[in-house]
Amino acid sequence: MSHGFDVADPDGPLDPSGMRAQYRTAGLAEDDLAAGPYEQFARWFADAAASGLDEPNAMVVSTADAEGRPSSRTVLLKAFDGRGFVFFTNYGSRKGLEIASNPYVSMLFPWHPIARQIIVAGRAERIAPGETAAYFRSRPHGSQVGALASAQSTVVASRAEIDAAYARLAARYPEGTDVPVPTEWGGIRVVPESVEFWQGRENRLHDRLRYVRAGEGWRVERLCP
Image 1 (tube, rainbow, N blue to C red):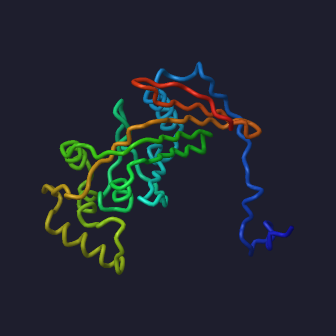
Image 2: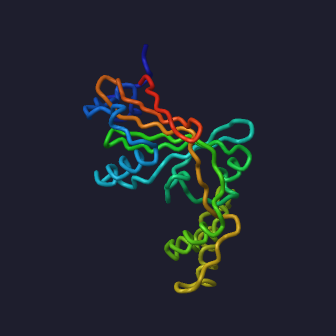
């Protein structure tokens, strides 16, 4: 059956059906895992950073509205510890509003160059205002002004309108002055219910080991690739 175009035709669209890579990396065995998902995440996160991967803290965050309609976007991880994984956003953005109505979230770290993925699934909650303020103050001045200028995810007439809003606030709060923390901006902590570690293997027989919350601890299960 013809696809309607030739993958070799420089004037036609590329055919993704033949695009594939053979993974030849070492495997992931149960004995390789740390006692808990946070420790294992720390190991792999350090490996990703050491590999020279661009923005290893970039992750795809997926949310769903009250009717179950999903949406996804790339967000930067800004903290993790035994309480969960933290990112920051405008609470009035699409993801902020969806989390308010349906707190279940999935986070995917797509580390393709090292043939690894981590998938975190859990429940999202707002962090304390003091934690938000402390992080906000650590951001570059321009990013602080940008957060104040943007009503994230809302429809805007033009780029010029965004630039004008930024310029007005940059004049009001020049470099060296305190920018107020936006009232609808802050941190989200995802408290995981499961954390899957995916290691690419030959012939698509990948290793998938998942920590699943079990009472106060975790159990580990292996998934078919």
